[in-house]
Length: 191
Image 1 (cartoon, rainbow, N blue to C red):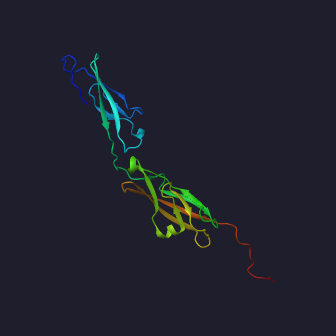
Image 2 (cartoon, rainbow, N blue to C red):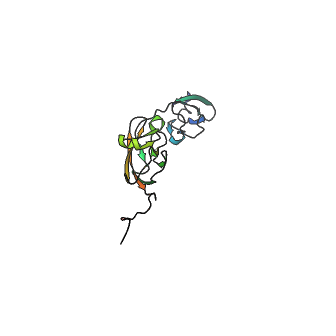
Image 3 (tube, one colour):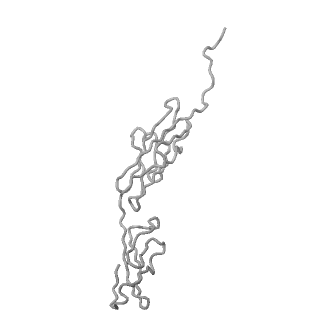
């Protein structure tokens, strides 16, 4: 912002300050140039709205005020990144459907809609066996797992942000053995 002072002696000595609207200390104003910069991006709330700053310019004796309307539009600069690229988990067999397998979380360094992440299991085959909560990344079983039928599963999980950028993680599920069979002799009688 720029203010003018008709007094020649004061024209180069104006001091600028943000006097209201900067409760979260998100913005900074250079007191001599009037340049407003973004200081703390993590302090943004709902980015669909705008911020009104009340700014002053003073020559030491007189003060003038103006409003500055700031709208921050999010940009989709980052892909979602999982905390781990590979998750190794174990789930015991014969558990009822709905059993929690693990929670895989991805973070996107963008803000606003571009920072919101949703989750999806890529493989149709794995979607028949496992389910993922699109909002939380919680993976659960859809069926009862049987170690004798299959010992390991590999789930490719995709995280998508609001702008279509994606990130991937692999969840390796080992099916734990449960003692479900009694010992059996090969022969019914030994001589």
